[in-house]
Length: 223
Length: 350
Ligand code: B12
Image 1 (cartoon, rainbow over the protein chains, first blue to last red):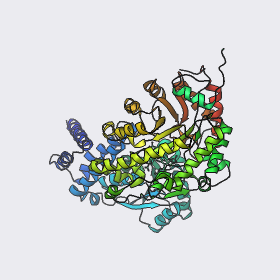
Image 2 (cartoon, helix red, strand yellow):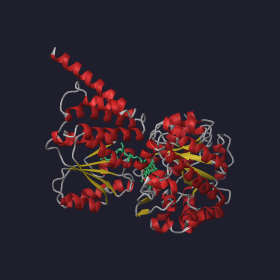
Image 3 (cartoon, rainbow over the protein chains, first blue to last red):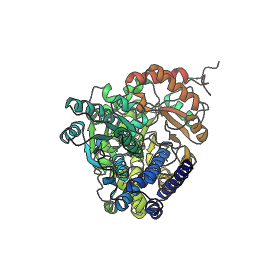
Image 4 (tube, chains in turn yellow, orange):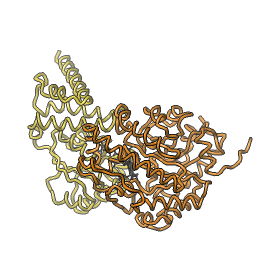
């Protein structure tokens, strides 16, 4: 009996997440807002994020990886979620409580879209993110070493040479005695499946929307 | 067994482009950067003079025996002409810096740069002319333009461009008009300098970046207008973005060939393009860095077997530029494998 109820709840939550996903892809902010604030979708802000926002974004990211959706759609849906969470569920970040402090940077490149998309998704997921902007390896390491409260580093790259430079970031951090997980992403890592391991990263995300689940896995938190 | 007459690179490529089988599968090693290493120069110094690029291209063609010379320096030459900066690194392609268009409103006053006023562009033209003087009509010379629809990523930044696409079609149309004027002039100047064909880099039109319905409203009409005006043959390249779902549309833009991604099935791409578009691709340039000779041979064999039959295929990497980190020995192995497995009639055709 209890089991059946839970199944029923799961099915409803899944249907709501799919409706939310469809609204995002239509750029239909109104419906997305309604779904996110509906009384039936009870629970606090963070629970709503985990029930609606994250599954929808994750599926959108997976569809992009498989070639079913375009980057512009992934970008727009991430931005809408970021906005909605900031407006409607501003307390979500504090509900996450003592979550990890994440630093996010682009290594070398002037093309910041990958980082922007990761930032949007992480904010929509209720994580506190410190945006380092664009830095070279030495600059990035200096900043991480100076900021002892940073628990985890996320790096986005576009060029292969910059992706390879993550190995240097790793080395310099180790030399400075600073050990923390490094999560990488960006085109070169998608195109060479083993590159993230070669440069000594802790994990790699194939799309921006994969980021919250990776962080949760690495830090032992929900989801 | 009938031995076919050996062809010049030009004959081989033209035969393949007309969807017939030449003496062997043509291949393009699009190594814009490796010439610097061949001449013992830094990447910055290599691109500082037309003569070094000519020498680099001619030497590499002699070493690998591939079927083109590449007139391409780096995509940001264009953005430099639009007033942007180019950032050099010691171990990779020059990249564009801070985008020159800071606010979308600036598009209203934008005018296309004049080619003869920009040394970054005239150097490319001088290099193409130098290559032509060396090889005449025996080896095709590939010129490159970034499409009017894709270049705004460098002109104004990707995020601002996506927002412009979503929110302001009037300003977008104005930007396309200016960019189209430049793109046609830039392509024609390269053709006049001696380029055989123009490679139209248009990855933003790829379904990896924008959905097909948006492409049909934007990148597609831009390509139709632009390619029609360019006074020479063109090939469209998606720079490793996908294209299978838009092949029918691309075939109507007036282009003769398409550069395809390693993310899609080469045999299926070939089937879809057959008789309409020559397929160029699709070795994964990023992964190539770690290949040994055996892996190079396996990859070349697989590509030829998937797409070689009937002509209409040029073996190449999937991006249109081989990364600096790819060792010369891998390129030797690729070249050797094409000579071994690419001879028509194919021994490996599927
Ligand atoms: C569109 C495109 C272009 C356009 C615009 C590029 C731009 N952004 O500036 C144009 C035509 C201008 C272009 C030019 C060039 N390009 Co280009 N281009 C592409 C293409 C097709 C998409 C790149 C892109 O911007 N995508 C959008 C971003 C947001 O996607 P992304 O980085 O993959 O990020 C996603 C995920 O990876 C993830 N993610 C990103 N960061 C992070 C971080 C974390 C922590 C996590 C979890 C996830 C994550 O989230 C994002 C969304 O889900 C790629 C190939 C490809 N298939 O991806 C080549 C590619 C990026 N280009 C490449 C190159 C080399 C160039 C040039 C340097 C060529 C040259 N010699 O001139 C120029 C210079 C570009 C410049 N900016 O100055 C190479 C880079 C690798 C390399 N070989 O070194 C690529 C990968 C092609 C290839 N297969 O080799 N290009």
